[in-house]
Image (tube, rainbow, N blue to C red; front, side):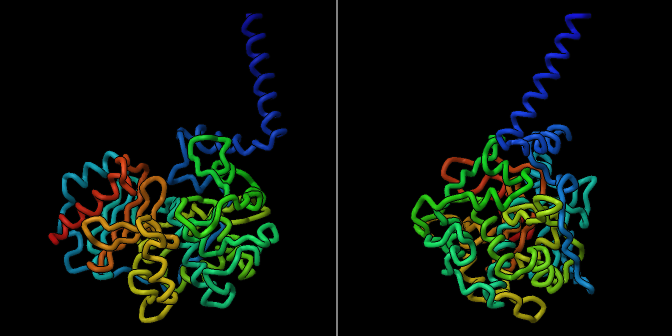
Length: 380
């Protein structure tokens, strides 16, 4: 018994020392990561984690707009391959919108059309939409405006707001999702996101090529916020959430109850059919319900690859699967708004996991399956 007491006492002392060391070395955010992830039975960030963070509310429209039902609504069953993919990867919502009408929708047990789940990096597309709106509103001069115009730390640097949106900034951010000591983990769980981001330096020549960095979009969101003198949530609400007739309020994770800086690179909690509206807005050249919400020239530029041979435009992933021009909002656990303008088609998938990536592919296997099986379903 005395030996057990000594062991437990030693274990407690060790744990206290480890916690103290995390605070001393400024890694105390790891404790929040452990509490949010491992103590809830997960091994990584998860789609329902918004309840463990501070959030700003984005209010829905006073007169919400509902997707009209296509004449063939839910008249076709999912293919067996699609059913198996949903089962294997934990799909919670899957919707097909054809000719701006709801053609098919499916939700797994415990989820529905109104379930809010984490967008993860689909928010990058929405932050780029806010950039386009800020340019149209005159708050930002254009894609070529230097980031040094907004933050003293970057005075004299060549990096532009367009470089941030297109993942060509030259920042020294390391995009790592496995190490708890990475800047990516710190950005997700720490309570002072601005300090983390403004500590990033430009180390490579900007505007030369694609390198995916979440820090780019976070800095871009901070620039939009500073330029407009509005929180990102407020600007999103007035610029898109209400004008697009969103059915539900949404939540945007913020870093802290005092700072309330939105995680602009991720973390908008909403539902599949409201997320789909951004696909429709960009498919229709920035028009919604007969009104020009976003500049069509900006939309056209955002939805094609900036650099030849690379799979990214401005805030959107780009694919030529099935020899079609496709632009995509994409999140780390297989969140997708897949838009195929030539066939007036939008595919939305939200869920717990994504598939595996084959060598040389820009997307994981599930992405291609969702497209292929949708075409099999619609018989085109």
